[in-house]
Length: 119
Image 1 (cartoon, one colour):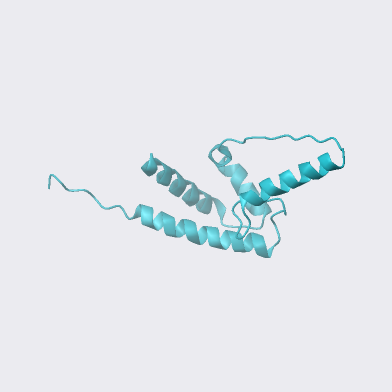
Image 2 (tube, rainbow, N blue to C red; image 1 turned 180 degrees about the horizontal axis):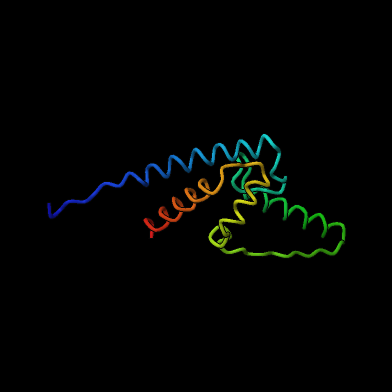
């Protein structure tokens, strides 16, 4: 019994739940045409490299037409970590996703447990 290590199935369960939630949420957002055209990450078939190409292409076109250009670049650090449950719930309702506090609590607890196991 000195070498006994418990086997945690929580990580497996959380990954299955995460994939199912991602699949259903992506389908809901796609079917309701919720995401804007400029949303490049977390979408099937659209890469963040496409955003870099579009930015570069726009800048080069402006330079070729002798136009002035500017840019504002913001690095938003860990937005999901700083979102309160109440704000997240309001956003979910706004986009037509219902489930109440229990859904938010489960998602946050699984995400927190997943991160604590990795660190």
